[in-house]
Image (cartoon, rainbow, N blue to C red):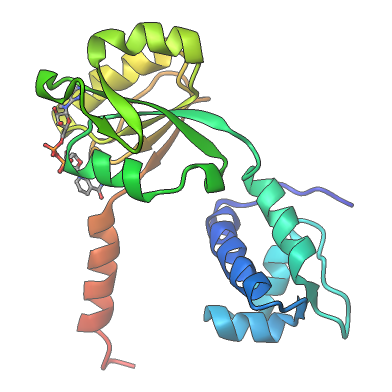
Length: 212
Ligand code: NAI
């Protein structure tokens, strides 16, 4: 099967395909046409065909897509079977919510440590893990070698902390801090999350909904 470089917009749609295909599997649907899948997902059938062609097609003329096989392949591309070690820094309101409500394991990651600079939080726990003081971070990273850090700390602390984490072997950041990290190493991956942007997209759509 020919491999192609997958573009970022396609990569961004993959988790959504994975989720919808999981719902189809739960409904015991074995195959689906691009037209039906498009209807469910609010995309066009040609968009779906184009996206799936990026990793070999999968569809057969007149048969559609084999739901289980397609989901497995997308899962493989997303790396959901991996167990990438993750540390979460900042166990405040957001950090605790992320640690508690998100199933990291289903998404190829394993939350292995939670850290916070507030001494009052030491000895407490979240998501079944102890909240550790920052003084333990280096020893912990050397022992467990996590590759991803979730930053749920205030903006002002993000840059210095990120540089420290890179020196401790962190290769990717899930960055909620609202600060654009500037890291010298181009191989470090940063995924910024701004929930407010999503809300503003909704606000725009509400504001312009009568224009079409
Ligand atoms: P919070 O004040 O409840 O929690 C922040 C935690 O970070 C505290 O427990 C504090 O002790 C800890 N902390 C501060 N500096 C630290 C450092 N240098 N090292 C380790 N721990 C440190 O705040 P909340 O509500 O949890 O928000 C956290 C950050 O996330 C804020 O900057 C907020 O603006 C941002 N945020 C981002 C969202 C997004 O969509 N990206 C959504 C909501 C909040």
